[in-house]
Image 1 (cartoon, rainbow, N blue to C red):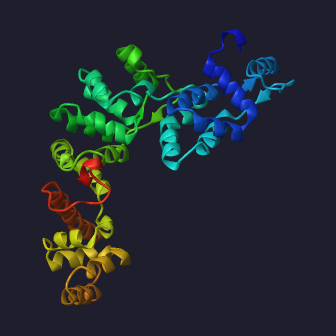
Image 2 (image 1 turned 135 degrees about the vertical axis):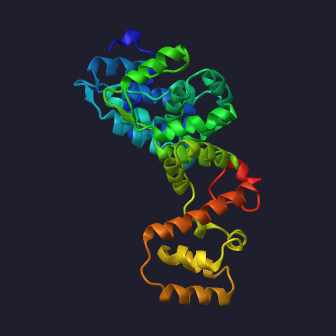
Image 3 (image 1 turned 135 degrees about the horizontal axis):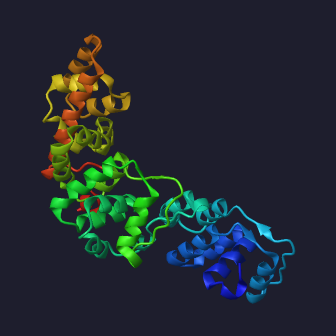
Length: 340
């Protein structure tokens, strides 16, 4: 560590590490998100601060503090705690999510696709337009889900399903792939390969991104994925909106959905349902219908779980269809478009 070659953010990182977590948290409150990210990345690269560097930095910032023996720090934990106390919960969550991939791989030098994280979604989509769908899938898997969804929305519609299919199929990506992406995108994307494979993507990531798209977009994507991999499409659909999620619907929405479901279907579907969901449904159908279903459930013998889940999925598909047609709105789906 050479003081004469240190940048401003590097000196700030050393200073804050010397001052402690509480002082750093207060300092972060006054900085922009970009400045917090830049200083935090510098902190993550520091494991030991030589005594002379500490003294020179403190003197430059007019601080009456000297360190004679150097300082060893747990930068990963320090940065997390400092960010956690640096402002509102929304800001903390955003900063922690953006730092997450870098924090997890800090010791090995891995960093996420930082440049794309801070670029406008339309610009990113334009940049990625000529890339192979697999490359785009890998890149989107490293981004915040809301950012990835916006980028995806600006990509050609006929490519969206293929990209999300690939996101869902991703398990691990080797360092060589990240190196190839860095080479292809040059200065626009900064990637430092992890010494070990870094787990990204997967069905959960695909679900999160799809759920941030506008209403109806998921149906097109899932229909196209279904043509190539029926099982994968079903697994994604199950995680996007589950039968139990019906308990979160308001009364009017639930009533509109239940009008399309016959009592025999509903009875079988409720066989493995939680008491909370059963109570919610019984409160939104006629008293007579509720009594009949309760009686049928009590009289029903053992039923294969697969049969129950099949009926539940049919009702879930019906809910998604009604949402696409604009007849109902499912809570927690469709990004901002769901609020109009």
